[in-house]
Image (cartoon, rainbow, N blue to C red):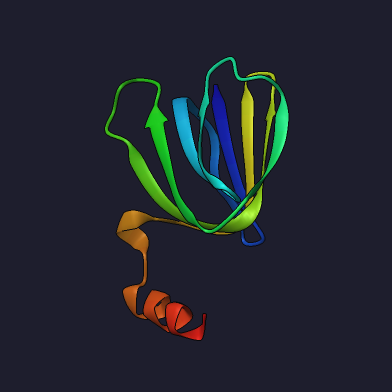
Amino acid sequence: MRLDVVTPEGAKVRGMEVSEVVLPGIVGEMGILEGHVAMIAALGTGRMIVYPKKGDAPLRYAVSSGYCEVLGDVLRVIVETCERSDEIDEERAKQKLAEV
């Protein structure tokens, strides 16, 4: 399965071969595996865990509200923000949390 992740700032992930992706659905986490039935789902704010197809270590991202679409062998994730766990600006994240 190929993964594309897009934000208003542009593509964050394009054509990554993955075996599974865990997403923050509105009512809880959902796992998308290869061969998943076609669907569109709303996403909340939370973590996205990406399991690369070649068996590398999982990649973790923080994402905020959006949608995902599974169509054929492509999973498209369209979200407001997407940051890899090692790229998160902790000060900005704390400020956003305080605003909630």
